Amino acid sequence: MLQSEILGSTGWLDDVGLVQKVGESCGVFGVYGPGLDVARLTYFGLFALQHRGQESAGIAVSGGTGVTVYKDLGLVAQVFDEQRLAGLDGHLAIGHNRYSTTGSGSWENAQPSYRAIGERTIALSHNGNLSNTSSLADDLGVLQETMSDSELMTEAIGRELDRTDWDRALSTVLPMFEGAFSLTIMDDDHLIGVRDPLGFRPLVLGRIDGGMVLASETCGLDIIGADFIREIAPGEVIIIGQDGVRSIHPFKNVKQRTCVFEFVYFSRPDSTMSGQSIHAARRRMGERLAAEHPADVDVVIPVPESGIPAAQGFAAAARIPYVDGLVKNRYIGRTFINPTQQMRDQGVRMKLNPITQELEGKRVVLVDDSIVRGSTTRQLISMVKKAGANEVHLRVSSPPYKWPCFYGMDTGRQEELIASRMTVEEIADFLEVDSLGYLSMDGLLEATAVDPNRFCTACLTGDYPTEIPDMRSTGAPST
Ligand code: SF4
Image 1: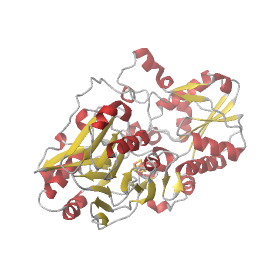
Image 2 (image 1 turned 180 degrees about the horizontal axis):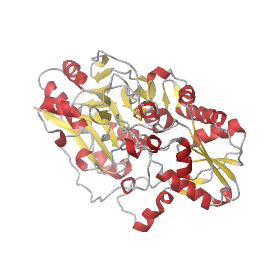
Image 3 (image 1 turned 90 degrees about the vertical axis):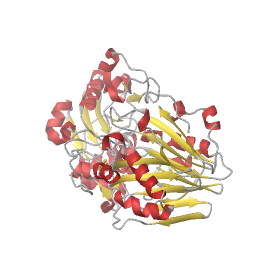
Image 4 (image 1 turned 120 degrees about the vertical axis):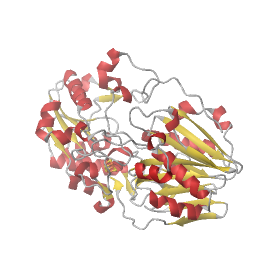
């Protein structure tokens, strides 16, 4: 088993408060492909899914006689190079990009997690967050503090697999898990995809040169030239091996509640979900926003990058020029180098910089996808005003974010969410904007063009689709 050394990291940019945004979810990937360079395909799959998590990256690979895992802190391109990939030879692989809450960014939490069972090893990549970790840890007789939810899942599956075959093990163990889990799992010979019965997080199936691929989003298939077959259904388990592909359905109650923020922010705009283009849905959110909250202004400016499609939709519907007034430093990502205190004080400027010529003397609508805690947005508004904008009207392409997420998104505690403490008018005052308008819940759901009953909207409505034991005041770790 390979294990990399832990780099001498003292913190990520996001950890030192430079960027406050809803944390991304994790990215999972898997490929079963005899004769294919599965490690390289997984690398590129993770590369396309990098937006879902930048804290650590890992690949597990098997050639039929053992599983090798390599993982480390950093971006996919920082963790892997040609030499590392050359050491990962086999015919099936899984991969993981991790996003996590502040303070849990240790090497131990990087994935895939793995467990030896007799002569063989299983590896597991998890996108989501379990909401019953303490009862699961009790059932397993382990201390909750010593294992992440993903390690608990690996442990539970491994113990059962030691007694029986994959079908029976998964049918017994998976119903014990509550919360959000889209998984790719492997042993020496099998690639397995799992989507929880509420389907919180996406997972898609594709085909490449006689091989099969699993990915969090369709963009993970596109990059390697795989054909999209279909989405894994909520509650479906797909088992891929030498004898073909089969599905089992171990969950009794299946009721789709996919995270609506996949449409607002998390997924890449070039991905599709439930048959809809994410980019087109975001444009429609902007069009609806323009109808619900018009503004008499000179230009529409997006907060890059996730605010771009909604700003385009707003500008087109309102017939107001769309202008790039802010430039994002695309390569800031995550760095092992701590910024100086002076840079930290500059806050948002580390990530976004205004184009003064486009803002000077203008009345501006600024379009963003969400406001979580509000302090970064406040800095942003101040920066736009300093660049010379006469008026700043903020439009948000989702409803007020009032409730913490327990399904894999790092939103912090409820009291940190600005919309849970303040009215829209109070938020406008706090941000020092000339006006503020949020997209309505109906507007958001209609813009997705998906059956509204299929979504989780808990962070916007407080209507949680699962029991949340003792966690509302504490926030929850994400994986
Ligand atoms: S609570 Fe919000 S962010 Fe979390 S899964 Fe539900 S819709 Fe998504």
